[in-house]
Length: 211
Image (cartoon, rainbow, N blue to C red; front, side, top):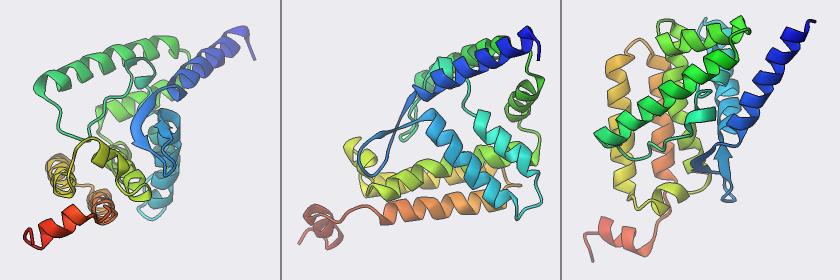
């Protein structure tokens, strides 16, 4: 091993440690916020488990899932539980582009990692497209586990969450119509999250027509 290689791994460690400090809006059942690294590991293992049944390259799927949010080490996470305004979406794209550019410079001597980043950003391979769609399912698992605590805290209703999930599936289906398995899984994850919404007196009255 050369000094240059060791320095490259040290830079990689610094980026990943920074990524681990990025907190998402999602939470576990005890109210602890999810980190970007927790999210990435969760996605990688789930994608690998499904990819085994699809004929996709498991090593690529797992690697792509692990790096899919790496730009957020510098860009931070942008909650998309609710629709972003055009201004928010533009700001998100700009921050992530700047973050990704910085990551490319810092990890330039690790071609395998850069290759994964390039593949994911280009969205041309089945594996990259699969990870992009499947990524949207993981927050719904956390909603299911904590009885939709975050959507409720954000002021959403059960109907709001259901509509947001539907819009998300429909939007992705237009661009990723080749990803039937991932889209089906995303739809089912959304349905389970909505079903986990706790019944309160108010919601029961609303369903009964206000009686």
